[in-house]
Amino acid sequence: MLVTGGAGFIGSALIRYLIKETNNTVINVDKLTYAGHLENLEPIENSDHYHFEQVDICEYEAMKEIFRSYKPDAIMHLAAESHVDRSIDGSVEFIRTNIVGTHNLLEVAKEYYLGLADQKKKQFRFLHVSTDEVYGELGEVGFFKETTPYDPRSPYSASKASSDHLVRAWYHTYDLPVLITNCSNNYGPYQFPEKLIPVVILKALQGKDIPVYGSGENVRDWLYVDDHARALYKVLEEGAVGETYNIGGHNEKQNIEVVETICSILDNVQPQDDDKLYKEQITFVTDRPGHDWRYAIDASKIEEKLGWKPEETFDSGIKKTVQWYLSNIDWCQAVTENNYGLERLGAGG
Ligand code: TDX
Image 1 (tube, rainbow, N blue to C red):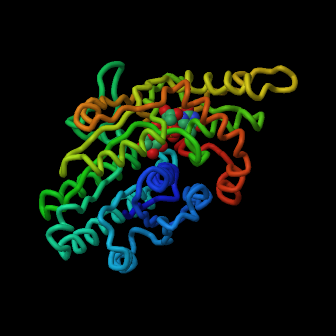
Image 2 (cartoon, rainbow, N blue to C red):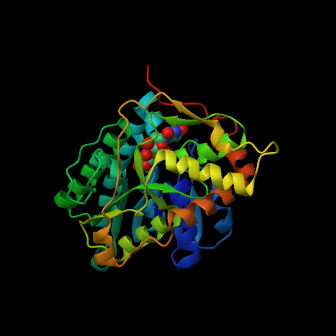
Protein backbone atom coordinates (compact mmCIF):
# COMPACT_ATOMS: atom_id res chain seq x y z
CA MET A 1 0.00 0.00 0.00
CA LEU A 2 1.40 3.36 -1.01
CA VAL A 3 0.38 6.36 1.12
CA THR A 4 1.28 9.89 -0.03
CA GLY A 5 1.54 12.60 2.61
CA GLY A 6 2.01 10.02 5.33
CA ALA A 7 4.06 12.33 7.54
CA GLY A 8 1.22 14.83 7.81
CA PHE A 9 -1.60 14.92 10.35
CA ILE A 10 -4.20 12.70 8.64
CA GLY A 11 -1.67 10.63 6.69
CA SER A 12 0.26 9.68 9.82
CA ALA A 13 -2.96 8.72 11.65
CA LEU A 14 -3.81 6.51 8.68
CA ILE A 15 -0.38 4.84 8.67
CA ARG A 16 -0.44 4.26 12.43
CA TYR A 17 -3.85 2.62 11.94
CA LEU A 18 -2.75 0.50 8.95
CA ILE A 19 0.36 -0.79 10.73
CA LYS A 20 -1.35 -1.45 14.06
CA GLU A 21 -4.69 -2.79 12.86
CA THR A 22 -4.06 -4.46 9.46
CA ASN A 23 -1.47 -6.69 7.81
CA ASN A 24 -0.62 -4.23 5.05
CA THR A 25 2.89 -3.15 4.21
CA VAL A 26 2.96 0.64 3.88
CA ILE A 27 5.25 2.80 1.78
CA ASN A 28 5.05 6.37 2.99
CA VAL A 29 5.91 8.89 0.25
CA ASP A 30 6.28 12.35 1.74
CA LYS A 31 8.22 15.46 0.76
CA LEU A 32 8.47 16.58 4.41
CA THR A 33 7.25 20.14 4.01
CA TYR A 34 6.79 22.39 7.05
CA ALA A 35 3.70 20.31 7.97
CA GLY A 36 5.20 16.82 7.53
CA HIS A 37 7.14 15.32 10.43
CA LEU A 38 8.55 11.82 10.86
CA GLU A 39 8.04 12.22 14.63
CA ASN A 40 4.34 11.57 13.86
CA LEU A 41 5.28 8.02 12.90
CA GLU A 42 7.48 7.17 15.89
CA PRO A 43 4.92 4.69 17.31
CA ILE A 44 5.28 2.46 14.22
CA GLU A 45 8.58 3.48 12.61
CA ASN A 46 10.38 0.26 13.57
CA SER A 47 7.77 -2.02 12.02
CA ASP A 48 9.04 -4.32 9.23
CA HIS A 49 5.85 -3.40 7.39
CA TYR A 50 6.75 0.30 7.17
CA HIS A 51 8.98 2.05 4.58
CA PHE A 52 9.64 5.73 4.05
CA GLU A 53 10.65 7.55 0.85
CA GLN A 54 11.27 11.30 0.89
CA VAL A 55 9.90 12.22 -2.53
CA ASP A 56 7.81 15.08 -3.94
CA ILE A 57 4.70 13.73 -5.74
CA CYS A 58 5.42 16.22 -8.56
CA GLU A 59 8.61 14.31 -9.49
CA TYR A 60 7.65 12.02 -12.35
CA GLU A 61 10.75 9.80 -12.54
CA ALA A 62 11.06 9.39 -8.77
CA MET A 63 7.39 8.41 -8.44
CA LYS A 64 7.73 5.99 -11.36
CA GLU A 65 10.68 4.37 -9.63
CA ILE A 66 8.69 3.98 -6.41
CA PHE A 67 5.91 2.16 -8.27
CA ARG A 68 8.51 0.04 -10.10
CA SER A 69 10.31 -1.04 -6.98
CA TYR A 70 7.45 -1.50 -4.48
CA LYS A 71 4.66 -2.65 -6.84
CA PRO A 72 1.80 -1.41 -4.64
CA ASP A 73 -1.70 -2.95 -4.69
CA ALA A 74 -3.24 0.41 -3.92
CA ILE A 75 -2.46 4.07 -3.43
CA MET A 76 -4.03 6.32 -0.82
CA HIS A 77 -3.33 9.89 -1.84
CA LEU A 78 -3.23 12.39 1.02
CA ALA A 79 -0.29 14.60 0.06
CA ALA A 80 -1.60 18.16 -0.16
CA GLU A 81 -1.15 21.70 1.00
CA SER A 82 -4.12 22.02 3.35
CA HIS A 83 -4.23 25.34 5.20
CA VAL A 84 -6.80 27.81 3.88
CA ASP A 85 -5.06 30.83 5.48
CA ARG A 86 -1.74 29.97 3.81
CA SER A 87 -3.52 29.61 0.45
CA ILE A 88 -4.81 33.18 0.85
CA ASP A 89 -1.27 34.48 1.42
CA GLY A 90 0.17 32.52 -1.52
CA SER A 91 -1.41 29.93 -3.80
CA VAL A 92 1.60 28.69 -5.81
CA GLU A 93 2.36 25.63 -3.67
CA PHE A 94 -1.35 24.76 -3.57
CA ILE A 95 -1.60 24.72 -7.36
CA ARG A 96 1.68 22.82 -7.65
CA THR A 97 1.17 20.08 -5.07
CA ASN A 98 -2.59 19.69 -5.11
CA ILE A 99 -3.23 19.98 -8.86
CA VAL A 100 0.07 19.33 -10.67
CA GLY A 101 1.11 16.72 -8.07
CA THR A 102 -2.19 14.85 -8.31
CA HIS A 103 -1.98 14.93 -12.10
CA ASN A 104 1.54 13.52 -11.99
CA LEU A 105 0.45 10.75 -9.64
CA LEU A 106 -2.52 9.88 -11.85
CA GLU A 107 -0.23 9.58 -14.85
CA VAL A 108 2.29 7.39 -13.04
CA ALA A 109 -0.48 5.25 -11.52
CA LYS A 110 -2.19 4.87 -14.90
CA GLU A 111 1.00 3.67 -16.62
CA TYR A 112 1.66 1.24 -13.77
CA TYR A 113 -1.95 0.02 -13.78
CA LEU A 114 -1.96 -0.63 -17.53
CA GLY A 115 1.10 -2.85 -17.12
CA LEU A 116 -0.44 -5.05 -14.42
CA ALA A 117 -1.67 -8.60 -14.97
CA ASP A 118 -5.47 -8.98 -15.04
CA GLN A 119 -5.77 -10.31 -11.49
CA LYS A 120 -3.67 -7.45 -10.08
CA LYS A 121 -5.66 -4.96 -12.17
CA LYS A 122 -8.86 -6.11 -10.49
CA GLN A 123 -7.40 -5.42 -7.06
CA PHE A 124 -5.73 -2.07 -7.77
CA ARG A 125 -7.29 1.08 -6.28
CA PHE A 126 -6.45 4.79 -6.33
CA LEU A 127 -8.08 6.47 -3.32
CA HIS A 128 -8.07 10.26 -3.48
CA VAL A 129 -8.60 12.00 -0.14
CA SER A 130 -10.33 15.36 -0.38
CA THR A 131 -12.35 17.88 1.55
CA ASP A 132 -15.94 19.05 2.01
CA GLU A 133 -14.76 22.58 1.15
CA VAL A 134 -15.09 21.71 -2.55
CA TYR A 135 -18.86 22.08 -2.08
CA GLY A 136 -18.56 25.72 -0.99
CA GLU A 137 -20.43 26.99 2.05
CA LEU A 138 -23.84 26.28 3.59
CA GLY A 139 -26.33 28.69 5.13
CA GLU A 140 -28.10 27.91 8.39
CA VAL A 141 -29.66 24.69 7.09
CA GLY A 142 -28.81 21.74 4.81
CA PHE A 143 -25.93 19.31 4.42
CA PHE A 144 -23.29 18.51 1.82
CA LYS A 145 -24.15 15.31 -0.04
CA GLU A 146 -22.02 13.49 -2.61
CA THR A 147 -24.30 15.04 -5.27
CA THR A 148 -23.91 18.65 -4.08
CA PRO A 149 -22.52 20.76 -6.96
CA TYR A 150 -18.94 21.94 -6.59
CA ASP A 151 -18.55 25.59 -5.57
CA PRO A 152 -15.05 26.07 -4.07
CA ARG A 153 -14.31 29.56 -2.78
CA SER A 154 -10.74 29.69 -1.48
CA PRO A 155 -7.50 29.05 -3.40
CA TYR A 156 -7.11 25.92 -1.27
CA SER A 157 -10.58 24.51 -1.93
CA ALA A 158 -10.39 25.40 -5.64
CA SER A 159 -7.12 23.44 -5.87
CA LYS A 160 -8.69 20.42 -4.15
CA ALA A 161 -11.77 20.66 -6.39
CA SER A 162 -9.48 20.63 -9.45
CA SER A 163 -7.72 17.54 -8.17
CA ASP A 164 -11.07 15.77 -7.60
CA HIS A 165 -12.09 16.55 -11.20
CA LEU A 166 -8.79 15.18 -12.52
CA VAL A 167 -9.23 11.95 -10.55
CA ARG A 168 -12.77 11.47 -11.93
CA ALA A 169 -11.50 12.18 -15.45
CA TRP A 170 -8.84 9.45 -15.12
CA TYR A 171 -11.59 7.04 -14.09
CA HIS A 172 -13.92 7.86 -16.98
CA THR A 173 -11.23 8.24 -19.63
CA TYR A 174 -8.66 5.58 -18.69
CA ASP A 175 -10.69 3.24 -16.42
CA LEU A 176 -8.28 3.87 -13.56
CA PRO A 177 -10.10 2.32 -10.55
CA VAL A 178 -10.49 5.39 -8.37
CA LEU A 179 -12.40 6.22 -5.20
CA ILE A 180 -12.87 9.72 -3.76
CA THR A 181 -13.59 10.77 -0.19
CA ASN A 182 -14.57 14.26 1.00
CA CYS A 183 -14.30 14.82 4.72
CA SER A 184 -15.19 17.50 7.26
CA ASN A 185 -12.74 19.26 9.62
CA ASN A 186 -10.40 16.78 11.28
CA TYR A 187 -8.98 17.16 14.78
CA GLY A 188 -6.91 15.05 17.15
CA PRO A 189 -3.28 14.31 18.09
CA TYR A 190 -0.39 15.43 15.85
CA GLN A 191 -2.30 18.21 14.04
CA PHE A 192 0.15 20.90 12.98
CA PRO A 193 -0.42 23.96 15.20
CA GLU A 194 -1.79 26.28 12.51
CA LYS A 195 -5.38 24.95 12.49
CA LEU A 196 -8.01 26.23 14.93
CA ILE A 197 -7.90 23.59 17.69
CA PRO A 198 -4.13 23.32 18.26
CA VAL A 199 -3.77 27.10 17.84
CA VAL A 200 -6.31 27.68 20.62
CA ILE A 201 -4.68 25.14 22.96
CA LEU A 202 -1.18 26.53 22.49
CA LYS A 203 -2.13 30.23 22.59
CA ALA A 204 -4.10 29.56 25.80
CA LEU A 205 -1.18 27.77 27.45
CA GLN A 206 1.24 30.52 26.37
CA GLY A 207 -0.98 33.17 28.00
CA LYS A 208 -1.49 34.87 24.64
CA ASP A 209 -4.62 36.21 22.88
CA ILE A 210 -6.75 33.40 21.42
CA PRO A 211 -7.69 34.65 17.93
CA VAL A 212 -11.31 34.06 16.86
CA TYR A 213 -12.04 35.20 13.30
CA GLY A 214 -15.04 37.47 12.73
CA SER A 215 -18.02 36.83 15.00
CA GLY A 216 -16.95 33.29 15.93
CA GLU A 217 -20.32 32.01 14.70
CA ASN A 218 -19.02 30.14 11.65
CA VAL A 219 -19.84 26.46 11.90
CA ARG A 220 -17.55 23.49 11.27
CA ASP A 221 -18.40 19.76 11.51
CA TRP A 222 -15.66 18.03 13.54
CA LEU A 223 -14.32 14.56 12.75
CA TYR A 224 -11.84 12.79 15.04
CA VAL A 225 -8.83 11.85 12.93
CA ASP A 226 -8.77 8.16 13.98
CA ASP A 227 -12.41 7.81 12.90
CA HIS A 228 -11.36 9.29 9.56
CA ALA A 229 -8.46 6.81 9.21
CA ARG A 230 -10.86 3.88 9.76
CA ALA A 231 -13.26 5.32 7.20
CA LEU A 232 -10.54 5.69 4.57
CA TYR A 233 -9.49 2.06 4.91
CA LYS A 234 -13.11 0.93 4.76
CA VAL A 235 -13.67 2.89 1.53
CA LEU A 236 -10.48 1.46 0.05
CA GLU A 237 -11.44 -2.12 0.92
CA GLU A 238 -15.19 -2.05 0.33
CA GLY A 239 -16.05 1.08 -1.66
CA ALA A 240 -17.42 0.81 -5.19
CA VAL A 241 -14.96 1.92 -7.89
CA GLY A 242 -15.73 5.36 -9.31
CA GLU A 243 -17.81 6.37 -6.27
CA THR A 244 -17.46 9.28 -3.88
CA TYR A 245 -18.05 8.99 -0.12
CA ASN A 246 -18.55 11.91 2.26
CA ILE A 247 -17.07 11.40 5.72
CA GLY A 248 -18.26 13.50 8.66
CA GLY A 249 -18.43 13.31 12.42
CA HIS A 250 -21.98 14.63 13.11
CA ASN A 251 -20.42 17.30 15.30
CA GLU A 252 -21.51 20.71 14.07
CA LYS A 253 -20.20 23.46 16.33
CA GLN A 254 -19.78 27.20 16.10
CA ASN A 255 -16.11 28.15 16.37
CA ILE A 256 -16.74 30.07 19.57
CA GLU A 257 -18.27 26.95 21.17
CA VAL A 258 -15.17 24.96 20.26
CA VAL A 259 -12.89 27.66 21.68
CA GLU A 260 -14.87 27.98 24.93
CA THR A 261 -14.96 24.19 25.35
CA ILE A 262 -11.16 24.01 25.06
CA CYS A 263 -10.79 26.87 27.56
CA SER A 264 -12.99 25.15 30.12
CA ILE A 265 -11.19 21.79 29.73
CA LEU A 266 -7.91 23.63 30.33
CA ASP A 267 -9.40 25.41 33.39
CA ASN A 268 -10.03 21.93 34.84
CA VAL A 269 -6.89 20.08 33.90
CA GLN A 270 -4.33 22.92 33.94
CA PRO A 271 -5.74 25.76 36.06
CA GLN A 272 -3.81 29.03 35.96
CA ASP A 273 -1.94 30.09 39.13
CA ASP A 274 -3.97 33.25 39.67
CA ASP A 275 -7.30 31.45 39.02
CA LYS A 276 -7.78 33.45 35.83
CA LEU A 277 -10.00 31.71 33.28
CA TYR A 278 -8.55 30.88 29.88
CA LYS A 279 -11.61 32.31 28.13
CA GLU A 280 -10.51 35.79 29.20
CA GLN A 281 -7.81 35.45 26.52
CA ILE A 282 -10.39 35.10 23.70
CA THR A 283 -9.96 37.95 21.21
CA PHE A 284 -12.15 38.59 18.18
CA VAL A 285 -9.94 39.48 15.21
CA THR A 286 -10.44 40.56 11.59
CA ASP A 287 -12.35 37.94 9.65
CA ARG A 288 -10.74 35.61 7.08
CA PRO A 289 -11.39 36.97 3.54
CA GLY A 290 -14.11 34.86 1.88
CA HIS A 291 -14.68 32.97 5.17
CA ASP A 292 -17.07 30.07 4.45
CA TRP A 293 -20.03 30.31 6.79
CA ARG A 294 -20.96 26.74 7.58
CA TYR A 295 -19.89 23.19 6.66
CA ALA A 296 -21.92 20.10 7.54
CA ILE A 297 -21.63 16.62 6.04
CA ASP A 298 -24.40 14.17 5.32
CA ALA A 299 -22.49 10.92 5.93
CA SER A 300 -25.46 8.60 5.34
CA LYS A 301 -23.96 7.02 2.19
CA ILE A 302 -20.84 5.66 3.89
CA GLU A 303 -22.94 4.60 6.90
CA GLU A 304 -25.56 2.77 4.84
CA LYS A 305 -23.35 1.31 2.10
CA LEU A 306 -20.22 0.50 4.10
CA GLY A 307 -21.41 0.41 7.72
CA TRP A 308 -18.98 3.08 8.93
CA LYS A 309 -19.91 5.38 11.81
CA PRO A 310 -17.76 7.74 13.87
CA GLU A 311 -16.93 6.29 17.30
CA GLU A 312 -15.80 9.49 18.95
CA THR A 313 -18.18 12.19 20.19
CA PHE A 314 -16.89 15.76 20.18
CA ASP A 315 -16.86 15.75 24.00
CA SER A 316 -14.68 12.65 24.26
CA GLY A 317 -12.48 13.57 21.27
CA ILE A 318 -11.73 17.11 22.35
CA LYS A 319 -10.79 16.00 25.88
CA LYS A 320 -8.37 13.40 24.48
CA THR A 321 -6.95 15.99 22.08
CA VAL A 322 -6.33 18.64 24.76
CA GLN A 323 -4.73 15.99 26.97
CA TRP A 324 -2.50 14.86 24.08
CA TYR A 325 -1.22 18.41 23.47
CA LEU A 326 -0.56 18.90 27.18
CA SER A 327 1.52 15.72 27.21
CA ASN A 328 3.30 16.55 23.95
CA ILE A 329 4.45 20.14 24.25
CA ASP A 330 7.91 18.92 23.12
CA TRP A 331 6.38 17.73 19.85
CA CYS A 332 4.76 21.14 19.32
CA GLN A 333 8.11 22.87 19.88
CA ALA A 334 9.95 20.44 17.60
CA VAL A 335 7.55 20.75 14.65
CA THR A 336 7.22 24.53 14.76
CA GLU A 337 10.88 25.31 15.46
CA ASN A 338 12.36 27.55 12.76
CA ASN A 339 9.22 27.56 10.63
CA TYR A 340 6.13 28.88 12.39
CA GLY A 341 5.52 31.01 15.47
CA LEU A 342 1.71 30.80 15.57
CA GLU A 343 1.39 34.23 13.96
CA ARG A 344 -1.82 35.24 12.14
CA LEU A 345 -1.93 34.08 8.53
CA GLY A 346 -4.30 34.90 5.65
CA ALA A 347 -5.67 38.15 7.05
CA GLY A 348 -5.57 39.67 3.56
CA GLY A 349 -4.45 43.19 2.67
O1 TDX B 1 -6.82 31.10 14.59
C1 TDX B 1 -7.88 30.75 14.04
N1 TDX B 1 -9.06 31.34 14.42
C2 TDX B 1 -10.27 31.04 13.85
O2 TDX B 1 -11.32 31.60 14.24
C3 TDX B 1 -7.94 29.75 12.99
C4 TDX B 1 -6.65 29.07 12.54
C5 TDX B 1 -9.16 29.45 12.44
N2 TDX B 1 -10.30 30.07 12.84
C6 TDX B 1 -11.59 29.69 12.24
C7 TDX B 1 -11.66 29.63 10.74
C8 TDX B 1 -12.61 28.49 10.48
O3 TDX B 1 -13.96 28.95 10.51
O4 TDX B 1 -11.84 28.35 12.70
C9 TDX B 1 -12.42 27.56 11.67
C10 TDX B 1 -11.50 26.39 11.38
O5 TDX B 1 -10.37 26.92 10.72
P1 TDX B 1 -9.17 25.97 10.19
O6 TDX B 1 -8.71 25.13 11.34
O7 TDX B 1 -8.17 26.82 9.51
O8 TDX B 1 -9.94 25.02 9.20
P2 TDX B 1 -10.87 25.33 7.91
O9 TDX B 1 -10.54 26.62 7.28
O10 TDX B 1 -12.30 25.08 8.33
O11 TDX B 1 -10.38 24.16 6.92
C11 TDX B 1 -10.19 22.85 7.45
O12 TDX B 1 -11.20 21.97 7.10
C12 TDX B 1 -11.25 21.47 5.80
C13 TDX B 1 -8.83 22.29 7.03
O13 TDX B 1 -7.81 23.22 7.29
C14 TDX B 1 -8.83 21.91 5.59
O14 TDX B 1 -7.59 21.33 5.24
C15 TDX B 1 -9.92 20.92 5.37
O15 TDX B 1 -9.94 20.54 4.04
